[in-house]
Image (cartoon, one colour):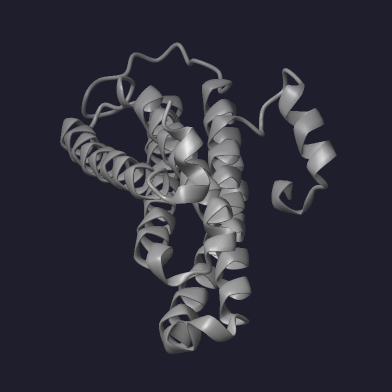
Length: 218
């Protein structure tokens, strides 16, 4: 399983020309790292005597982040499995029998099924990354100032994960035959991208206005 690999081995496999891992698993990893950064920021803040009034709120967010931590770990491997299935379907032999719209070949059926999975799994990753960003936005003014840099780093990592995942969905859309599905996926992509763009812009505006980070306003 890719999610259990040491960082150095994951990076080595990523650098090879034999996928997976590819962009989808890496998008999920970006989201996982973002989640870890937020978990650390929240855990640190829960120990601060200055923030006793936020303990219940932060504890609740800590539980949400723990769930996302598990989800994104699983998505690293789910994306790899989806990619393997698609590559295997593409390698199926093309039979001489003529296929029709009503009787597609087994190869066509396998490819379409795999394309659907390869488009939908990254979308789950993008949604999870969006959720990480939403949590970061809600806790920004409730965590210790000392960990706001980690919190913002998590936002940027989650944003990269979301955008990378959307690319993974996008690349499979042209080959999908189900136009209704394609339209639905595009709609979901638009909503997720709009949301992550909005949160990233808002978070940058707030964080870079804080005294320790004004140098980021270049």
